[in-house]
Image 1 (cartoon, rainbow, N blue to C red):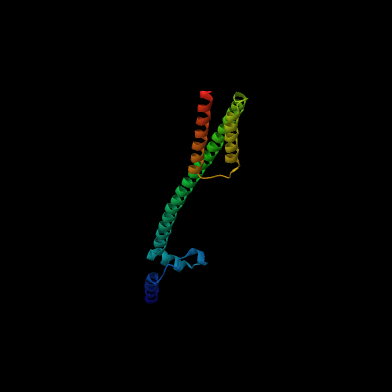
Image 2 (cartoon, one colour):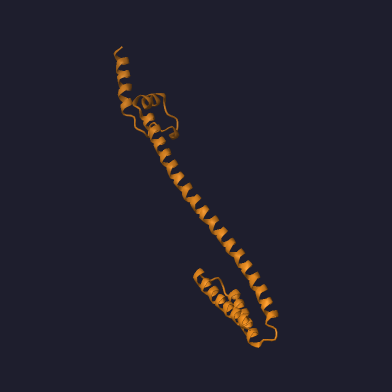
Length: 160
């Protein structure tokens, strides 16, 4: 009986000596005594709590990554839409400019000074088309210059 009490006492005390590494189920075959000690000492509960905390932290981090990714995708979509919109408006502008130049050529037939202004305007438009993409400010300045040339031509045609 004495030996049984000693064995039970040793088992109870050995439960206190169990650490988290001994209670890791991925390390291999764990004896029944070690399992009992892990359960009795609360090491498994602590391990589960640690894993749950780690999981919660990783989920929060993952949510932040998703939010950043969604913001990037939204910005990318807006940028693509903006580029497509600008491309479409440039094509519409080009079409209307071509029509205007054609009409001006027919209207100014026989007037050398007006034909020279139309030729200069057409040359400016073609130069603007052949230049590589510039900044928005440079494009706006160029458009203002073309508008000035158009206004000047319009004034010339109105006075004649």
